[in-house]
Length: 117
Image (cartoon, rainbow, N blue to C red):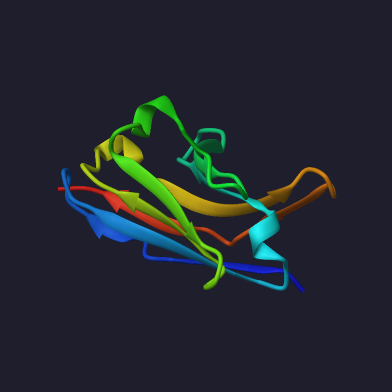
């Protein structure tokens, strides 16, 4: 059974930082592209950042320069360091594991990030 468990969400003031973690189990983590998505109320889920099995990263324009995605294949964990948080970063953040070759796609349960003064 594949599990993706996010943690690290919470309430933070504008300009603050949070670090999200996603611990994976039940899969060969190193062979998956990992991603962080978010969904704000009334909006579609969107890609925030991704990191391939080879370590290449990509970011949504709205978070470039503020967020950093990284992975630890030994710990089977992917991280999202979020700095200079803005009100518009408020959303539920979801972890995703994807292997296009095998047609596999898994999601975590999500963690709430609220940016408020």
